[in-house]
Length: 297
Image: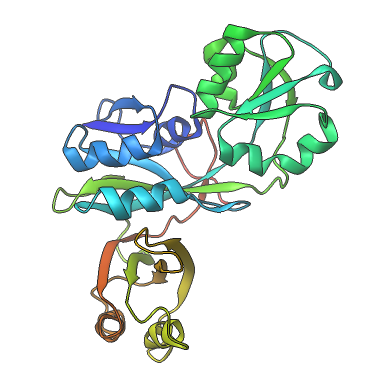
């Protein structure tokens, strides 16, 4: 099964795919240049499945994923999730002192997740954005000099990089939640969910009442009044006019649970659009890179 991920080989997305515990030979891993490319490849049918990051413990929502799902992939749904422990390494072509580094390259998320540590270890280095952590390592290996990349242990092995420092993340409990993508009606993307496992539903909505006092409170009250727990809310620009937003919600339960059904029906009375992005089993444990199973943390 062709499964897209943010490439090249050695990214955290690649590690999440390898660590998911899917049967050997079931996945044809397809590296793509950006998160947006992964989402639209599932939409177009170029790949049948995708895996993308959607939320990080330190930096919050991965907005590239939310925006691609909302604006460019109307037929793509979330069918599962996994949580990966994320540990960053500082990699270079050659051994060198940290105080001599001039540039540190990585994807925007790792640069943000390691910002406090980098201000201490290499305050003189300028951060430079790359399309992925693995691409950053490839660039640094090609260019050399007083440059380093924030990347994975897998990338260090694949590209032969020298490890200058480990554990760069500002908090050692750093994790990223990834979601499986598929076209609606095309079945499950990740491993089968355990029977009776806790579920999560993700949705996005907006309405022309968003400029009136209390509109969002009324929307959210539909869940509160029915005892449906919301676990995340994220606003994103509607891209139609300044000051108008759409809202991404995660909630406990499946979209066909009676209380959730009633809450969604109530929410729809306040909205112009309401789209269920998916209902899926909640990840039961954190996976560590390089392991095909789960490790509870």
